Length: 415
Ligand SMILES: Nc1nc2c(c(=O)[nH]1)N[C@H]1C(S)=C(S)[C@@H](COP(=O)(O)OP(=O)(O)OC[C@H]3O[C@@H](n4cnc5c(N)ncnc54)[C@H](O)[C@@H]3O)O[C@H]1N2
Ligand code: MOO
Image (cartoon, rainbow, N blue to C red; front, top):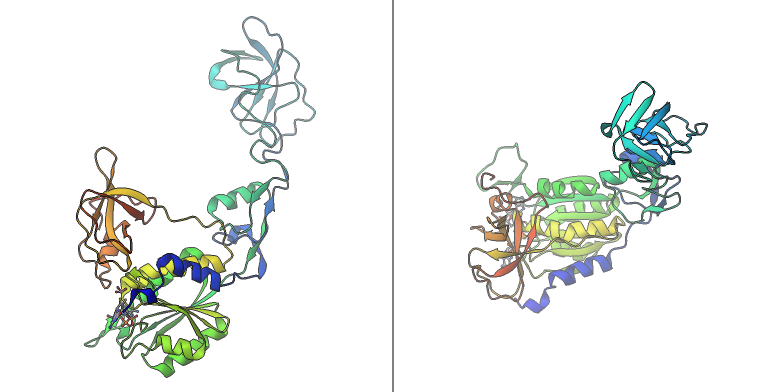
């Protein structure tokens, strides 16, 4: 098979984004239900945060100006958070007992924390005097009224929901959810929980793909297991076309006698591209079924997993309207064992990444890299990235590594 027929992984990613249009429909969404949704328009602050100058400490707000040599102030009022301070005016030498978050009264220009004071009946003696503005959060110091706080195309994280709520915003405009249909093709497949006859295996791909899509908040339509028969596939593809923005199928996408996915795609729609120079995951197919996009991930479980992560997820993010997509984090680490490689496909080697006693990153490739071996995915915390043109990587050289997540420092006790 000539490698020039395959797209490189970056070219495949580019082709996916070029051939797929983001959804246009926008809907109102309560902020409390907006986690993971994509914001459809820039959001501006309707108020200042904080809305007035407030104290950052429990203590005393002090009036500036001359004070007696012992730094003793007369306490004239107590101010709690939420209290209207518009009628309060401190004069030189006066102090207000004040709580964290309470408004600073006119006449006060600094706050001393109560640990640095000695209070008696109606006076407070201050140790070192704080400087002007100290322990005061100025009006609009976090967010100024009319400032842009979230831009269109952002996927909402918990911190965004907190920020929007702090501005009193209860509803926002978001892009509609995607309808994603999922099926597994293979006569040998059974559902987990059922018993197996000789030659049968469990459908693990559908569960894994659904789980990989969960953070992207799609409406998942599980079409189950479909037999390796062109007519059965044709019917289920038509069902998907009627209800889904994307159909993801796993299996049947290679060149075997039971691999009908590509011909059915050609028959009902068109193939955008087939085969990507990546390992695992070579026979990945992308295409169009009228307005429904199609992703055919290979049947081998690791191939299905890696192509969903590396190709299907970026496509879904794009169609959902997500912009400002972060590039995957790639770090350099020292390789602890030789990795053999034949030029042709960019390889994702399941590996364990850890820091040595001096804090330097080390990466250990795991044995058993076959694309049917899921245990090395659960035991790995990173991919060692082998470039497509590599002739192999030597032990003790610096290599590129893509950690699975930011909490993935390898722990030898994990499995
Ligand atoms: N002559 C060639 N044979 C193969 C090639 C090739 O280029 N020439 N490519 C190989 C590569 S690479 C891959 S990857 C696989 C992908 O093939 P398919 O997408 O057609 O997958 P199947 O044949 O249907 O299944 C492969 C393997 O995976 C198991 N499987 C399938 N579906 C599931 C599922 N939902 N859950 C768990 N396991 C599943 C299936 O039983 C097979 O063992 O093709 C190579 N062959
Ligand atoms: O790509 Mo296949 O996924 O090498 O086994």
